Amino acid sequence: MKIIQIIFSAVFFLLNAAVILRVFGIALFIGTYDIFWIIYLCSLLVWIVLICKTKKKLLIVPLCIYGCIFCIAPFRIGGISDVHITKIESPNAENTVMVKEFRRPIHSGFSIYKRCFLNIYYMTSLKDMQTGYYPFSEGKGEYEWLDEDTVILKYPYSKDSDKFNEVTVKFN
Image (cartoon, rainbow, N blue to C red; front, side):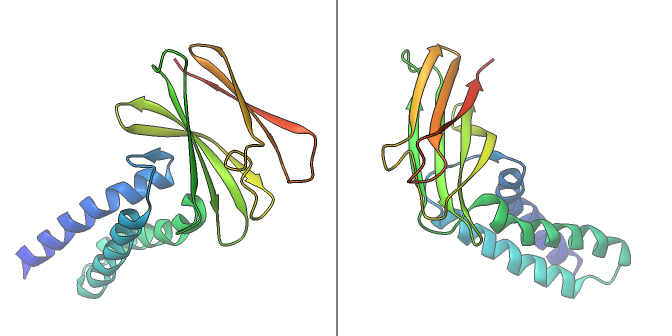
């Protein structure tokens, strides 16, 4: 029985790593969400099994904290479907910014990720948008590289707006 709990704990930790990193703004993969949500659901199942099997009160508190993180995750991460990704590379292709536009359960928005290392991205900002509006995918969002390490993203809040908001992303 002890070995099964150790195996469940190890599987739980490994499955949750991607989810927890994403909640704190670090993305190991940005593209398709199918695999991410499968990992998310498997993690929840393992979490439920661990809660049911644990008899020590010291383990219940950390497991409840994980449960809270998983309740927050769908709102923090974005929608299951209807995700649009725009890749913006610097002129020398050394720096990359990913704009992920999504629809959440309550509202729409987009997050801006900058590449830190190989295929690991860090979320620099999270912006709200009019529900169902994707400025970069619809061609209304603009970007301008000031130099190799700085890009300015300009976008309107809604389809009808002529006023552009700006976000500056700096590398280094």
